[in-house]
Image 1 (cartoon, rainbow, N blue to C red):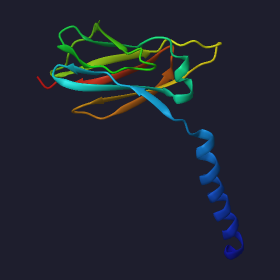
Image 2 (image 1 turned 60 degrees about the vertical axis):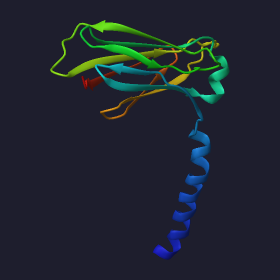
Image 3 (image 1 turned 45 degrees about the vertical axis):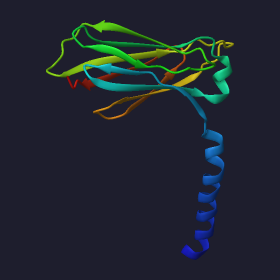
Length: 152
């Protein structure tokens, strides 16, 4: 019985390997500002599907909200999508630091020209001394809350 069924199982698995990645796969374009929060470098990679890049009409807008007492510094930006660049702003959260740890809210948006369609966004946040976190949203707004440990 197993000998008769096995060719069908193998054929089914091979069909999945061949067909599914072509249907579900996106090639992503990225912009990645880097900031320092209390001495910890945090890279923020904002990505959209490559076939949607021509719809971008302005800079990637990233807001980083931390408690007011956190030392915040922009380390680098890149050319963004279509050479519009990136704008990074800092704002205050009304929560206290807990020792050298603090909550950080990161919001990203991308101005786009669409006919009402939604453009998916993937945002990956990597603190130099912590774990990487990836969240999904849209060009209208993608948000994440991360616990960052300062190194100052």
